[in-house]
Image (cartoon, rainbow, N blue to C red; front, side, top):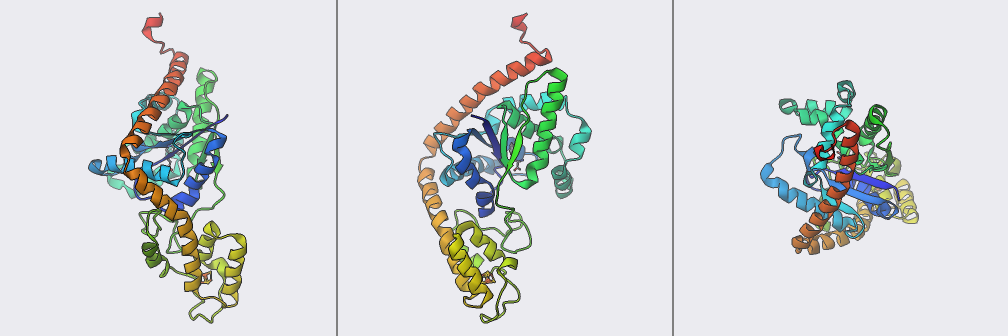
Length: 329
Ligand code: TRP
Ligand code: SF4
């Protein structure tokens, strides 16, 4: 089986953009690979954050991922900072990475602009840590969103630089893009994100979600219920694509075009269908939350497994670099 690796930052509430854009796909393909999913807390500390809240955020994200369907028997879900090999390999990769490659990274440039007061070396080095994440397990397939493609290409470059200089050690991984294009926020203008406050959280209740969806933008040409609309310029119609089957969706589209249904009816159908997916996730979340002890045990176990693989990769890598353990001489 090929090795799959992906990571997710513990930066806050998961929303349906995360779920339909990435996590749902992880859940589906986790059985086709040897799957590693990491909660990347070492990445999260490269921007301003609250240390007091970090442990809870990491645990909460972990529980969320299991609740979404990451299989705790199959997938090795672990906390990045608990496997120190990630930092070891980052240092090694730092020494084969030209500064110029990192200067080109668009995410770095964006974040440097956003966080002008805290442009630290970690933020600059972020893609190298990401490469180390993947290659520590010799990851071959990396399911990510569009915004990460440049980092995956960079990871391939790092593998190439290393292999060329020290001999073939690392595979050249490939990005696996999700079919869902990026999911827009409730404002219909920006990508769904926590910072834009235009999101539907995966643990929100039907009432909470209805409060947000009922006032969300639709086709601006539909002022009265009798005005025909164009579903293809309406964000709500794209949301339907995530949760409503084709036949029912066609009905909604037709109703929209002929003013046969109102926007509120259309939104109700969407929310009902969405809750069919979110309700079981919230139930699982609440059950798992009662049992953080066993979650902690799973994480410990998984970190052990990761350390074992990491150790092998690092031994091999250090051997190539001439950093043999002294006892060998
Ligand atoms: N940078 C990724 C993001 O922001 C998270 C990440 C860290 C990651 N390490 C990874 C993704 C390794 C895939 C593989 O989404
Ligand atoms: Fe959008 Fe639905 Fe209203 Fe059409 S009926 S404009 S698809 S919310």
